[in-house]
Length: 435
Image (cartoon, rainbow, N blue to C red; front, side, top):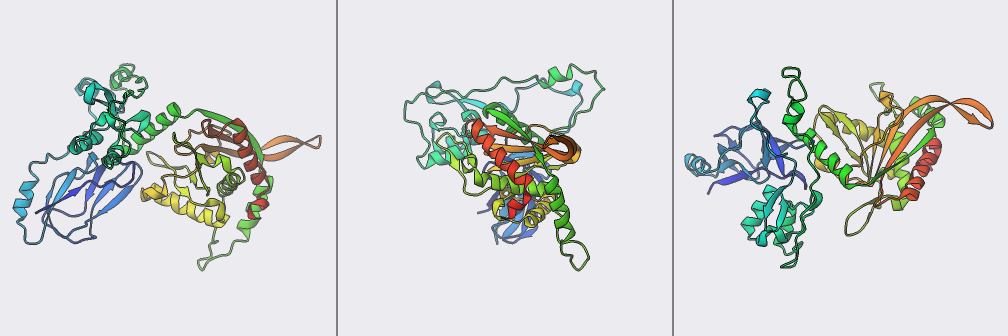
């Protein structure tokens, strides 16, 4: 029997991916472990390896196809001695996904459809309204499970694939006859047609969203709608930090090429200080869940990195245990691979807090949106010379403004104040980071 090659789930939350490139063509021999295709997720481009041997009989989903659902057949592999033509014919009944359409002029566009980001509504047994993903509905149907009895864990209670998989083992099912509460769906914004109507035809061009931009929009909208943010701002005197940084960089050992082994940035100190602050205020090192608070043992600090088309937040794991030079080296590696979209999902998913630093752009202060499952994020502005009063005298100092965004469900005002206060004490006295 021929083997179906399916769109893999490259991360726990992935429901769709873009088939960027085929590295094998129809008729090619394939060995187990051969890289056969490249799949683009919202954050990275990842290689797909074959798990069986045989001949690539049929490519069902062509290269360049966007939004291919997880577990959809993308190719057919004929085994040793199998008829390639017969194996190819077995895929004929599976309609190929359509390649992503190019943007068309407004005059050629079809009538506006319902917003794609709104969760699909289906009818469960008894006529209950159920918000669920297409993949979840298909899995529920194949398993003979009433989707209205599945407890949703997605945005606004939406039922997603993992909920159905959990229900298959008897977990996450509502009691028979239990009332099903329709999830809240936020009001939609202006439609595409309404926005375009505000501008003269020909005065703009349409640039289609890629997967990354759509995901950023979805997750940050979800964050601002479901997380009660509040903000705390402090000014930090970083004169001692700047002096320590200069001294440390000047004494860095040089390699055979004559280049220093490391060059610390202010951001490296920020990451370390925030990691240690969370250890000093452990009640703030948490993630909110409906069942209970997740209190983390380590400080896994995500750091926002700008890249073409959006941003990504690679995570420095156990940052409280790492030296400044190690943190610096990790961040340089993360930044390079992030911009090449070569990060692995486990390198940017999760974490217990995050840092967003716009100081290099001259931004004095700003607020950042919390990235779930984090309960906090630190927005860092530029270090600049300001006049301060010390011992009754006015003098100049290098001041850096930082703003902590907190999830009020998990970190209340007093606790957030303790956390940013601990950060200030560490960043203003960097010697305490190495004690």
